[in-house]
Amino acid sequence: MNAALGLSLAILFLLGVPIAVAIGLASVIGIEAQGRLPLLLVAQRMFTGIDSFPLMAIPLFILAGNLMSAGGISQRLVALAKSIVGGVQGGLACTCVLTCMLFASVSGSSVATTFAIGAILIPAMVTHGYPRPLAASIQASSAELGVLIPPSIPLILYGVSTDTSVGKLFIAGLGPGLLIAASLMALVLILCRIRGIGREDGAGREGLGRAFAAALPALLVPVVILGGIYSGIFTPTEASAVAVAAALVVGMAFYRELRVRDLPAILTQTVISTSAIMIIISAAALFSFLITRSGLPNDIASWFQGVFESRIAFLLVVNLMLLIVGMFIETSAAILVLAPILTPIAVGYGVDPVHFGLIVVVNLALGMITPPLGVNLFAACQVANLPVEKIIPQLLWFVLTVFAALMVITYVPAVSLWPVQLITGG
Image (tube, one colour):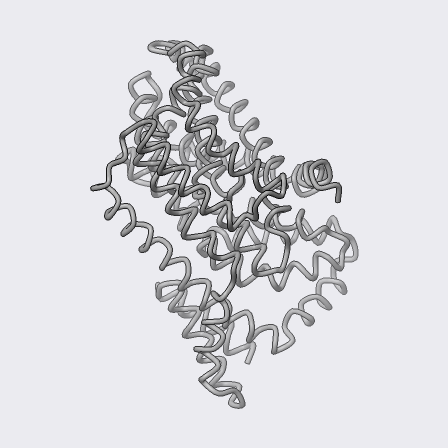
């Protein structure tokens, strides 16, 4: 059955079949090849895969992000970030990184961050003399913070598929997110200084007090969400409902840019985005059940332990494998298929499952800005009105910077685990 599953999935991916359909069809082919399992198992396992309380957070966080994008929050966060870091050479590029980090704390999605922030900052950077490919590269790489800074949809998927605490994963995402944000800021400051661009980035910058006052309602949203999760007042799933309520209040009552007539379009977009993710989750649940039943995880674990004796070598191989996978397979599907296989092996090497979750998600986030299937890359190119091949030379520096941060995250577990130990005591 393993051969049928793997071969059929590879062929379907090569043929360009949509990910959810490819995973589902490969599972059906595997069942038929095995010959002893009823096809009724397909419906049962696909339903069971999405019958999970933590998964309720996904549509609600998507809805909260869409409400915030339409409610004027992104503009206030951009103004605040520019007032903080916009006064130095390259400050506008730093504003992009900082704003993406702030917006990620309420949206949970890197693509949503790309469109919401990129639509404002890419034209602004171009106006201030940044080459358009460089501006798009800054936006694409900064937006991947959307899957690291909590709340994060990929971290929810990892937690559900590996039975790891989503709350601890959210806390652990803070360290890697801040490290990557700081690394990207350092890179753009260096590039701007070397290339002599961004000298007039402070033009039109608001005072910090005024920008902070305007952005305060928006800033209170992540404070309430994350504060409630970390203090134990509500679970991450319950926090998603709080996020929706907060987004409605801020967008309608404070900024008054969100109207009742906007809600049908927002809800429609939320349903479309949620459906795409949920179909992948249900298909991946069936696929994961079949490979677990076949004993493949145990076989892979035995192979790893026979070939790689040290944890250092294991983590290096896993990083390289996930980087390649992230270039060709959508993040949600990759997590749902690979995490249940790799996490028990990592635990066998003494790697904390929370730490390993961040290694997996950071790797796959890097795949979001690398061709041929980097979703952030295409989103940034769409906003910047550029062909993908124009952005690649500029993007290389950002990929290398995030990869360097990934190595630190991988081999210095405290980057991820220290916040968890500080907040939860374990």
